[in-house]
Image 1: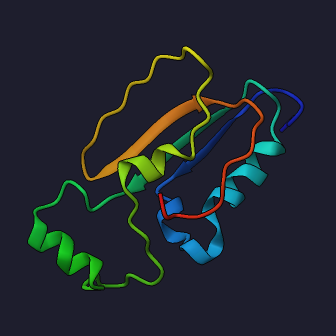
Image 2: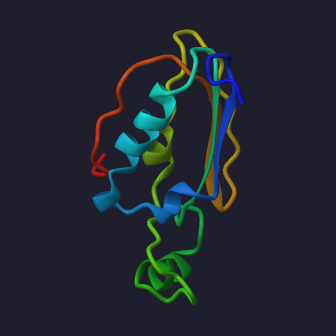
Length: 115
């Protein structure tokens, strides 16, 4: 693979296994910084936002078989992984996960899951 040429970095069903202590925004920034401009980032991420409240509460409380480290993030938190170029059209679909595709343009992401 020639990383001097644009490629697609696919983080599909991966990022929800990184906790806040893992600094997921810093991890993604480091990965993107190694890619050529014009590369694409593809992300999907589990979310509890669209579940019925009782199901979301059970899952947030750890009632997940084989859960291990799992961090649900909101749509807005997942959107922070993207770096859309100014004026870019955005399309997203929300089901039990949030996701998106964006074209890479260098700039740092802030670290912290608090927003």
